[in-house]
Amino acid sequence: MLVVMQSHASEEQVRAVCQRIESLGLKAHPIPGTIRTAIGITGNKGAVDLGVLESLPGVIECIPVSKPYKLVSRDAKEEDSVLRIPTPSGDVIVGGDKIALVAGPCAVESEEQVFAIAERVVKSGVRLFRGGAYKPRTSPYSFQGLGEPGLKILAKVRQKFGFGIITEAIDNESLDLVEEYADVIQIGARNMQNFSLLKRAGRAKKPVLLKRGMSATLDEFLMAAEYVLSEGNYNVMLCERGVRTFADHSRNTLDLTIVPAVKKRSHLPILVDPSHGTGKRHKVLPLSRAAIAVGADGLLVEVHHEPDKALSDGMQSILPEEFAELTEEVRQIAAVLHRQVN
Ligand code: PEP
Ligand code: MN
Image (tube, rainbow, N blue to C red; front, side, top):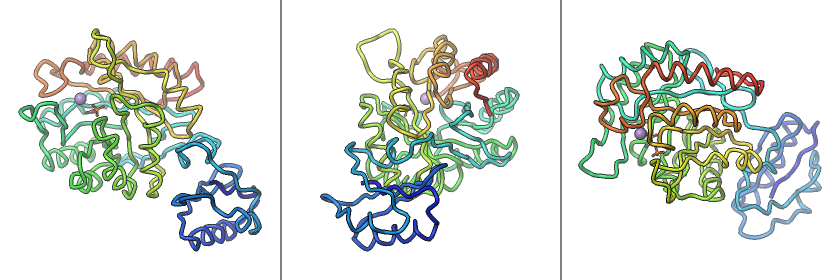
């Protein structure tokens, strides 16, 4: 259920409607838009009595939302959500006419490795840096990440280069730490339906990057995001990272068709990860071009200065020089679409 407020409704009136909703034992989610505020209602088991709310001052109408996802849907918010990620070098904007690039290694391996990559990619103007301190690996015998010491390395690189840091949390315990050290909390493909983790991310004070599960449908993907928003964190970016198919020429099949599909149904920004999406170094540049052309709000790219020695995902990591070329081409494609990389 959505309560649509008049364009000139006062903050006081929005507050009064929220209080009324809460007094019915429900949860109110005010969603400010450029023209008007809508208030999403969650927590209702059945139909809500519309009469009570429709008669309140400032309300235009109450509309039932038929889709299973409510807060992430275009019904709740007509215009695109534009995320502002505070970093030591100022805000990075994701969405609207702004495109954000994220670069860095798959995993934080050592301080030397992270600094070697950071000092190279910063020359391309990238402002968001990635690197996993907690690695969900297929084999328990593979490198599992450095944990908190890895987060401390990321904090150092953040300070030195002014990057915003994006890193993955794999459980509630690591999420507490990631929230403390990083600027964006990544929820990985394997955890897309870890509902308790999604709820915890929904209570976090930092933006969330939610990766698509490797066999998740669009509805499942949006429902996972709905979990985060329903707990009060509206700063969510989606990330397409490829799905499992019969194709065996790539690690995953990067589903770029999901970008316009998300844009049609949801106001949330969506990034594309061509690294996990293909698993092959030579496919990262062409798929990056395509992702921007299809309307993605950013890219998440694995970069390593010595990919052959990488402790994880070396095969899909590109060199810093290749990343420099990628950013140049992406800037030009973005310009055609009247967008800018920031
Ligand atoms: C990653 O980005 O490092 C990662 C593990 O990705 P995914 O969850 O998409 O596999
Ligand atoms: Mn990886």
